[in-house]
Image (tube, rainbow, N blue to C red; front, side, top):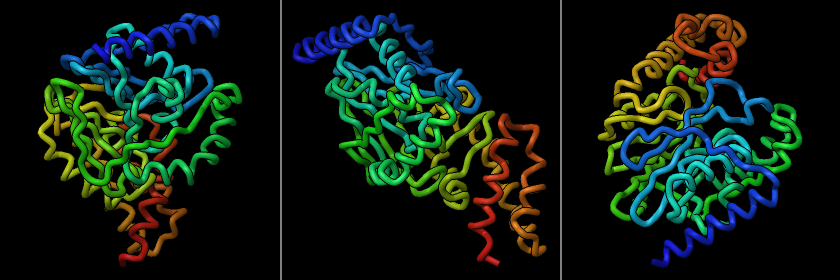
Length: 311
């Protein structure tokens, strides 16, 4: 009964906040990919003022006791609309807000869930990453998505961190959180719903949208092998189509990284500078990915810096 009272209070507070702002929030469209597991699919695009930073896959899981949110989107309006989507389906309290990593398209909506009594959860490195990168992100994305959206952002670090594995009880279902070594970033976290065997992979998995290296390509290739052993039946990637069979959803990403690593090693062996490698490494994969021209060069640079001293 206690959870119901808390949920009703939170719902009332949310309704009053929306009324105060003079706006009727349109819930984000979500699909129920498995019983009690809801996902909003972001655009395959760069963040912009026009799309409100709505480019990441985000969602929530409903248990008997309450709700866990997995990432909150790239702006406060997206986070608020995610909250509206949750409230359109349940009055149960939001117990946890889980951030899969530090990037703005996954955490800029956190403020929509502040003050609801939820525990914010992340990789043990996430507080440090937010502290080190937060001001840079706010400054950089002010130019990209505009003053109004950035002015509304509040960077909220987790108070519950994961060093290895952590089990979260939602009542009748358990979420298994796994912290990973540096790969996409140095603070990657996955969320596995053991009841429906649905894996929220965050940006360790990209489908259709070119993967972006902000951590370690060597680490990422190693993580893919371990990630493939998770006993999931479907995956929610950080970007791209959701609910795909597992681990087949990893095939394209693995092929890209293996090709990229091979090309960069070849470039280094030939004595080419990184500027030369950027022009051709990975290009054979170009037709397989959206946003290839936006991210492949930076991936080449990151990969070159890792392999440069291995020769």
